[in-house]
Image 1 (tube, rainbow, N blue to C red):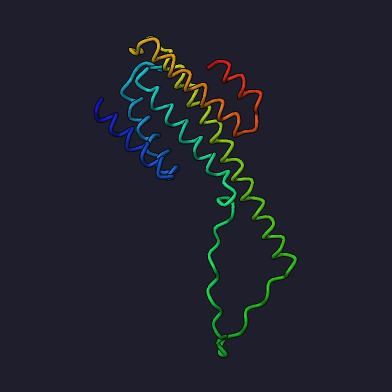
Image 2 (spheres, one colour):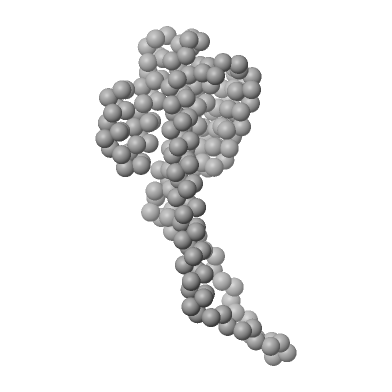
Length: 178
């Protein structure tokens, strides 16, 4: 158990450093290993892992809403060198085709990013819901007050997720459950 707690703290530290992708990969691996060792589908032993997984995805979503993060990271082009007089100049691309290709590429990138965000939202929701269900499992050895606080924390994170997806009414419902 001490080893698992140390691994959780390591994942939390990586997430706190803003390295969300690394922390998400680490918690996913930890969840996979821990799930293989536990036979019950909703075991209390998995609840803190699911909660942290959902929290990390939520933090990733919040970080992606940063207006400065939304700016594309573009590398500056290499300075143009003098043309070699021994080689023939390359034909210039057709301007309309080049613009259409750029627009299509930008549109594809935006759609891929929207799909990734939607997937992260769905996975975060599932992880938080699983954390709540695991906390309500019969093998939870926490005192009732602590278990209730854990469930409240799950509902609170679910409310945050609703706010991130601009669903304030649903967020209020989660807060009511809490």
